[in-house]
Image (cartoon, rainbow, N blue to C red; front, side, top):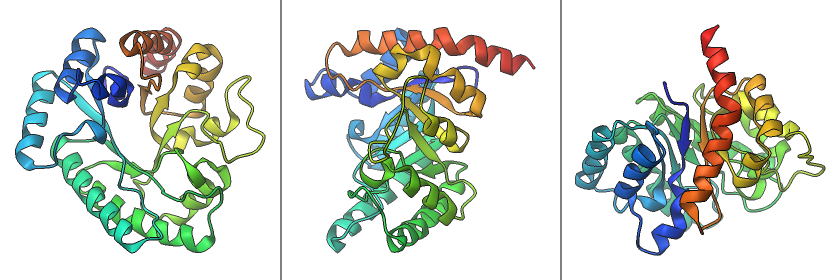
Length: 267
């Protein structure tokens, strides 16, 4: 991929809530405001999972010269105690997988869903079986799939280590949300996070938040050196002044990473 940076559409959730941003405006924004050739779609911006709408989305991505590097799927998480919620999440996961295939997504994020800080062996085993099934579906159209260290037990390093051991699918991976190990004691961010470096080689995609971009010199080079090979994705959570916050984050990431990536590609 010529351009290894992306901006997650969630970065504009404030504008979306205000009614002044939709998915098609997002395509215009990343292509012409930020000069990217990537789309990084949060499913909260999908207006529908109907094929007619998704075909329009695909057409617009192609018209703007965009590749879908990630589809982030909320409401599709694996673990649910309630059977009705579990069925609803599986339906959403199937909708997202169909959308990912039609749109040519390279990676798909589906959350683990365990709200507690820990996970039992039974929970991990049951979730691993579902991930194996979803990964098989994703492999059919050449995508990688896995959770994000996003909320609950997925932010516990020990849980994620066990999950990677339990899932058998070769295309199982993760979306690395930098520094988001809230259920892991002793996290130190002074020179980047050791857990981020540990999981960087296993990561299919990445979300770099505002604070990480402010500390770009310390945060990003160790991840490249650790073997991260996916797209470097900007995600802003501020919900205000979003265009400028994203511009700052993207500039910081490019300033620090572009020379490293160029050097690596030249070898």
